[in-house]
Amino acid sequence: MADDHKKHVDEVSGVETTGHEWDGLKELNNPLPKWWLYMFYACCVWAFGYWVLMPSWPLVSSYTAGMLGASQREEVAVALETGIAARNELGAGLADASLEEIQNDSSMLEFAMANGRAAFGDNCAPCHGSGATGSPGYPNLQDDDWLWGGTLDDIHYTVENGIRSTGDDTRLGDMPAFGRDGILSREEITQVANYVYTLSGGAADDGVDVAAGETLFIDNCAACHGEDGKGIKEMGAPDLTDAVWLFGGTIDDIKAQVTNARNGVMPTWSGRLDPVTIKSLAVYVHALGGGE
Image 1 (cartoon, rainbow, N blue to C red):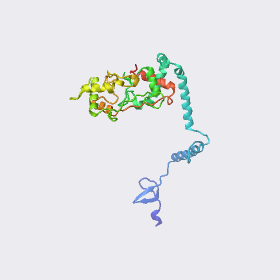
Image 2: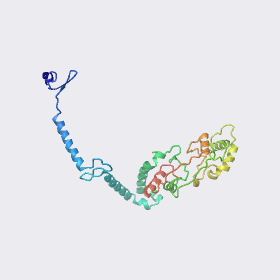
Image 3: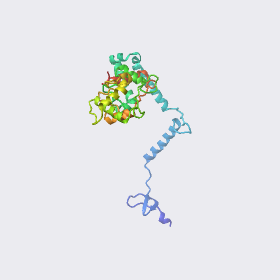
Image 4: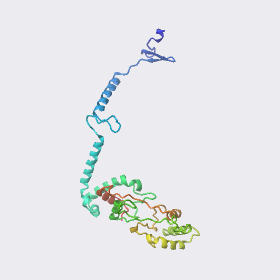
């Protein structure tokens, strides 16, 4: 019986077997290479040293700090403070300069554009797009159509205080839900939507009384949009004659907006962003091509 399990040398490889055999397959006794073992031992020593010196083992509500007391959180905090200090030093002049002075000074303008581009990507691009071309419900900042005005001061105020947001000085301007609140009937909404569609050169649906729609517009909409439909920027009411639409420009889109108005919200960035960054954003957005 002992002879059956006796180790022997494999005829093909010339390597001694371990004596283990499964279904006729014998296990060769090939030890690990020395270099591999030495590297493994070295890694074990290094790991033990790391456990002792560096933060490594999780605890119930914390972790072992290690003898060196290293902290990546603290390193990041220091790096962030250093970056903020460097940025504040470079942008020190922007804090006291007017928007026009920034725009007319090449060095301040260069910093404002770089700072504004970075801040836009971090804070504004999720809604307005990385190229600032907007999407349904979010304005295109590269055209010349501005609900609240596109001057440097207008843009700065909007960025600083937001629209329908939480700031005390946020811009306010809500469109009534004429259908949901029972102000206009379904037929009247159809009439006024068709009339609005014609203001930008569109053709009304057959059989719709556009004249009645005009009367309804003057009675219900002109107070904000003006009798000519060109809008009133002080109220945030859009120009309805330029074929630029925030929520879609088909007759059905206009009917939906008149029926159950959608009023977008822009955050109040004051308190979230520092004054220099807000100025930089205003200058950057104004320079995109659509500023007034």
